[in-house]
Image (cartoon, one colour):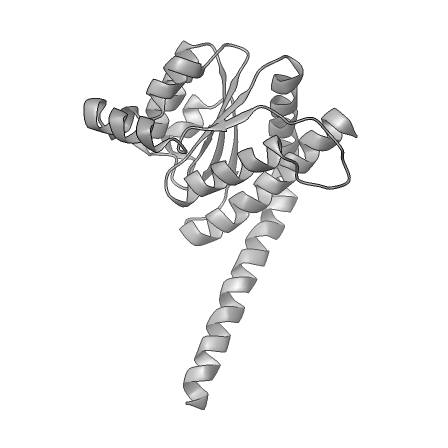
Length: 198
């Protein structure tokens, strides 16, 4: 029993150390890129646009989390107005109707066709950068003359080439990428709040 408990403790320490090491690497290598993306998002809001966000699975949850922080607030240090952010994975009716009628690859691009304006920004969150529905979303955003941003992992995948700016977390481990993505989301929101209200 003691050996089994020790193995579990070792696993926990290993997972946490990996997560910390990756975040440290991102801090060293990607801070300027994170600032660029935050500035692009803040500029969108200053120019009267809105932020559209999309992702699949855990990345959909990250998109919803970031949108919630933008609409409500991240820090109680600011008494501020709500910021315009919409996740494209939140409306069950639209998702299921579109998937049924046009296929799951169109569930985000169809909404961008309906909601997207040139002054808006699309932020795609993906650990692989190769999800077909996100690729279609980025292509539709390009058609609508929107700025496209990527919060990605691995080598950035196809989404990297469709993004005006990308933050690519340098890892092939999906859980580590997702943990880092949500950390980056919080930092982006904090930088946006400082830019607009600080």
